[in-house]
Amino acid sequence: MKFYDREKELNYLKTYCQLEPNSILFVYGPKSSGKSTVMRRVIKELENSNIVFFYYNLRKYATPTRDEFLRVFFEKSDKKYLLNKLELNLGVCKFGIEENFDFNNLCLNDVFAKINESINAVVEEGKKPVLIIDELQKLKNIYFNGGKSLLNELFNLFVSLTKMEHLCHVICLTSDTLFIDEIYRNSTLKNASEYYLIDWLRKGTIRNILKEEGFSEEEINYALDYLSLPYEISQLINNKKLGLSVEQTIKQWINVEKDGLKYLIDTTDLDEEGLYNVLSKFKDKIKISYDKEVKKEEMKYLKFLIENEILFYDVINGIIKPTSIIEWHAIKEIINAMQ
Ligand SMILES: Nc1ncnc2c1ncn2[C@@H]1O[C@H](COP(=O)(O)OP(=O)(O)O)[C@@H](O)[C@H]1O
Ligand SMILES: [Mg+2]
View (cartoon, rainbow, N blue to C red):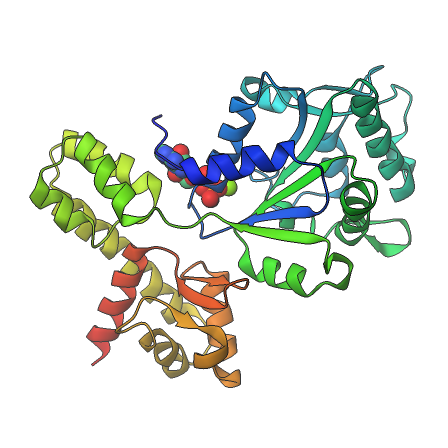
């Protein structure tokens, strides 16, 4: 697969990994904006540095259980850390744990002691550990002995590893913006976390890529009103090879999103008028300001649309917008059909 641009994001994240750890970094952005792809690229580009990446991707787990969490994060070995076989082509590591360790009778303190040991082992070898967890919000409903929430306790550990001890970077990725909202308001993380947005591709970037890929000026000008996500470009290129015009492809995408949105509205118990009113805010503009344009009673509709990835809520910048420009067009067609 080709990798497009993201110069600025790559530079930011590569530099970040090499600075002294001082806070937890949350990388967020609309679904499919390319967060995971950029992060993996950063790891690849730094593979010959003295950084040891502990990298865990929870994407493929619907909702991991406590046992799955332990198996994903730890591996029995006489080493303190070892290659993560789930991510062989990335050359990243996972935490090692003694052969005779009893996973069944483990309490959270034991888990954290093991993480600390692995990280310290890296530091003692003169290398820099960086811990990356992709789709962190999936650890939300895991509880340990005494009903302790894994995620809340992990945040305490992360603060200690970064802000207090400056031992290890902790980078968490998520597409779940309501989760980012929770984090933003979490008191443990106040003054201990930073946020980095990986957003849509910029128009100028898309123009350059399409030009390089041999699209005509006319095709480019048409496409620029609709494209925002990197995978859309790859798909547009493939579809062109398959004989579909730019216009046909884009119309299909909008239809798919429109049907999805209509289905969502038709099958929810939420009041239809309320939903349409909220969607109508995007009739003439692509983004709205949360504090200026959202009333309290509208929040439940917005939340529903955000949870279902129709809208993207950027809590840091206080704006709400569709998850992609294609989605925006789908929303507009739905509102127009109403009138
Ligand atoms: N910079 C890029 N160049 C080319 N394709 C990309 C790029 N970023 C993402 N993609 C593609 O877009 C899709 C979604 O990317 P992904 O990183 O999984 O998004 P996210 O993690 O933000 O949800 C993937 O198929 C990926 O290959
Ligand atoms: Mg991802």
